[in-house]
Image (cartoon, rainbow, N blue to C red; front, side, top):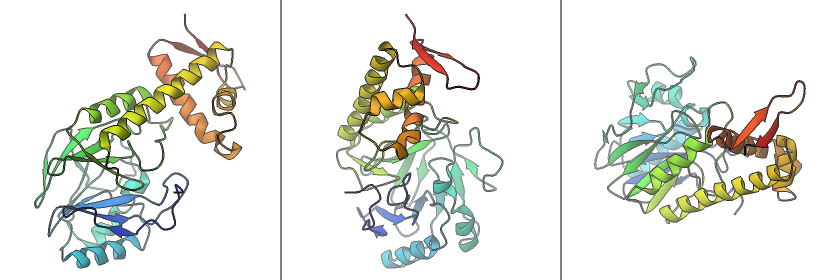
Length: 286
């Protein structure tokens, strides 16, 4: 299946407690689009709001009517990226007084107004459903996943995706934190993952273990390339990814390589030499 799947359903009902409404924003970074989830019964909790695409609110309302549900009781957000909270303003216009919560951490000034702070372990009780926020930084410093004990399921936001790996952005991401977050999720009693992009994942622990092994494999490749004398990120991308991705994706791959190098530096295994008007040079320590 292609990551950008034109046939991905606009709405779906994976279980009696969980409904999905697509954010209608397909793309290279979002795949078929950002999943938003309705969790509970009658007046469900809405998890994430999409990017603010105009047709989203009408699609959400049509799905609520189909289920015989009223308005969302509140909104909880996984993190600050625009494709997850861009729909807040339109939803508040349609549902006046709608509560919106996220973890307030390193937030910019342009967030929607009146977003409540939500912390790790601060239980959100819904109609027939319980969400437990789990702090999982790495993709973003404010990232929360949400554990649903009624189903032994977790809403992973952008920490685990259905059909791709996660980008670790250079400005606010951290691969060492991300690996620790994956291991924290692995320690939960879970069988199912509801990702922010792509289909439901039924083998939750198996997929998380695949994610961990993929990152460790990539790290080994980067260490081997550094050992062989490759020093800059563009050259490391060419050495590590070889012919596996087209040149158009090299910039994205460069973000991944940079995140690994920063992790190695935090661990005291690599160092960066800043070169004026040229890419930094990286080398192993010891």
